[in-house]
Length: 165
Image 1 (cartoon, helix red, strand yellow):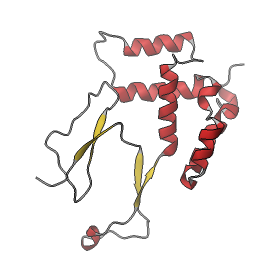
Image 2 (tube, one colour; image 1 turned 120 degrees about the horizontal axis):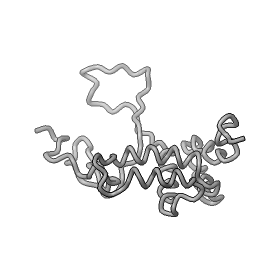
Image 3 (cartoon, one colour; image 1 turned 180 degrees about the vertical axis):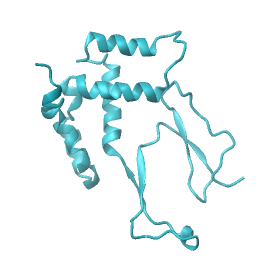
């Protein structure tokens, strides 16, 4: 068995938010880490040509999708607060999707994806905005600038064409 494989890779139920994950890093044994894995992607400069001989060297780096992390956190807060701003029909729909005894339960990721769209369109403005102090701490990190549009969404969201008349 390769050193990056684990015998029992599935740690979480597909119906619940992930509680832990495997941290796999070359040269170290796999270990279980509590919490949810951060949303990241790996960037490799396009000028770098991959060759069989050059596979030993590390080229590229991991970049966290900060906007995704922030939306996940705000979505969780919004859901915990009872989805303020959501319409009665939306609340009924969420309850219907998550009801006990459903013949074909939806996976956590499916419900989270739908809830994210609902959150971004129906949540109260205070859930879509960051507090000044939290926002300032994010701005210290230059890679967090990608999150700036998230703070401006309430002014532009939903798009004019989608707003009720």
